[in-house]
Structure formats: structure tokens, C-alpha cells
Length: 280
Ligand code: UTP
Image (cartoon, rainbow, N blue to C red; front, top):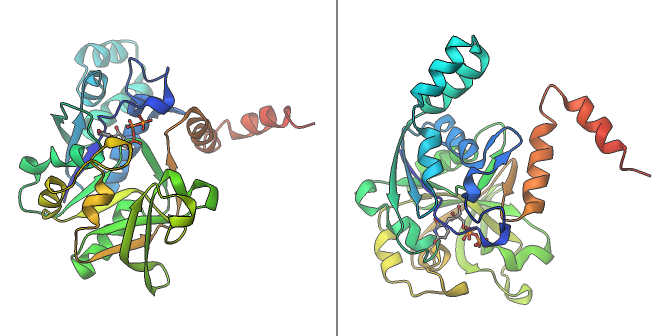
């Protein structure tokens, strides 16, 4: 399966950090956010990735490109461990790029993938969202997609105060972790939300979504919303994601994710000791 990774947004909620560098390239602990996303795609069996980029996004292309000079320098210096890490990035998968000329929203970003995708189902992984789970989030969706062959999204239960920050769905629960969706609304007012189930940045879509996006008028924030295009589809499934998600929209999201991944490091105990110094 092919995957599309939208990464062309301005990242305005994370300014000034995102003024001259893409939000997707900010490191969470030891690697850029988008590298986690690509690693999830690869671990889910995806072998063809299209990143939607825009202005100021050259560093994304550089990061996944081979750097002969750097590799030679590391080799000469005998820095084998770092060399292996650097090579791993380019060896992950082949990545293609297409530019979204105007930042008209997530729906519009996905529309840029139409020629590359053609007539096949495809995965979408938001480039500013990291997931952490035993079975990769995208793989969980692919497994459900293979049963129904209909668009399938990942869902997470969120607290009421966050409902107006996400795309929210309503529908009927058909299995413990599976919903048939009949209502989607982008960033609803709290009293208009059909449930507390939020879409968390991973989708398997069918190519008919492209025509639906073309029929979609700009919605919330004046942007062409993927959520609005999804409402035009007949049958959509939602999978309650088993794992953690980190949508890195703000500096606080970023900080929490960095701590989470820092706690996986060999220096975990040192980090815990450091954090304890803030208590009392
Ligand atoms: P977000 O809305 O969370 O990111 O989009 P943003 O627009 O960059 O951030 P804010 O709202 O200004 O703070 C989710 C993902 O979709 C991409 C973003 O790069 C991000 O990875 N996106 C968003 C696009 O590719 N194009 C767009 O027009 C909008």
C-alpha cells in the first residue's frame, strides 16, 4: 500500500519555533517527528511514501536524502554507531514529494496526491502526529480495511474540554473496538459533538475521496477539511486505537512527547531523578 504524509502546514500554533523550520522536523527526543511517522508506515508494511510539502520544507527532503559527505566523515572518524543511524534513515523507504502550493487545509493537501495514488486505496499519516503501540496504528487500520474494504480511520476517546480541537465522529459500535461511522464534524462546539471519539491522524482512504474533496467547500478556519469530504462517503469505519498518540500542535504537546520517548532511553533513571527535583 502507498502512504501519503501531509506536512505542508504552517504550524502556526507552534510559532516561533516553526517560523523557518517545518514543525514536522522538530526533534522529539532524538529524531524529527516525521521520522517516527515514516517508521510507523514502514512497520505497517508500506513501501511507497509521498510527502506533501510546501515552502520552507526543504529540510524534510534533505533529512531523507543520502548525505555522502557526512557518511564519509563519520566513517573516517570511526563513528560506526552514528553512521548506522544516519544510513538507517535513507534506507528506510523510497520517498517522493509533491508541493501543496497554497496551504488550503488537510483535504487540499491530500488532493495533491491524486496523480501519485491513482486508482488504489492508500494510507494517510499526519506528519505532525506520532503514535506508540505494540501493533503500529496504521497496521491496525489496514487489518480492519482488509475486512470491509471501506475507508477506515483511527479513533481515540478524548476528554470533553478537547472536543473543539479535533474532528469528532458519531456512529454505532459494531465490535468492542470498531465503529460504523454516520456522523463526522470538524472541531465542533462542545454541545454539538456526537461523541467523545476523535480522529487522531491515521486513515486508510479509497480513491473516491479525491472527487469528494473537490466537491468540498472550505469549512472550519477557511480550510478544505478532510472531515467534510469524509461525510460525503457512504460507508466509513472507525477503529479505537490501542496505543498512545501525540499530535504535536503546540510546545506543550511537544514537551510531553519528548518526555515520553526520553523515558524509553537508557538514561531513563537520570531523567526521572531530574523530574523529581521539581516535586515539592
Ligand atoms: P494541522 O492543522 O495540525 O497543522 O495539520 P498546521 O496547519 O501546520 O498547524 P497550525 O494549525 O497552523 O498550528 C495537520 C497536518 O496536516 C498538514 C500539516 O503539515 C500537519 O502535518 N497540513 C495542514 C498540510 O499539509 N497542508 C495544509 O494546508 C494544512
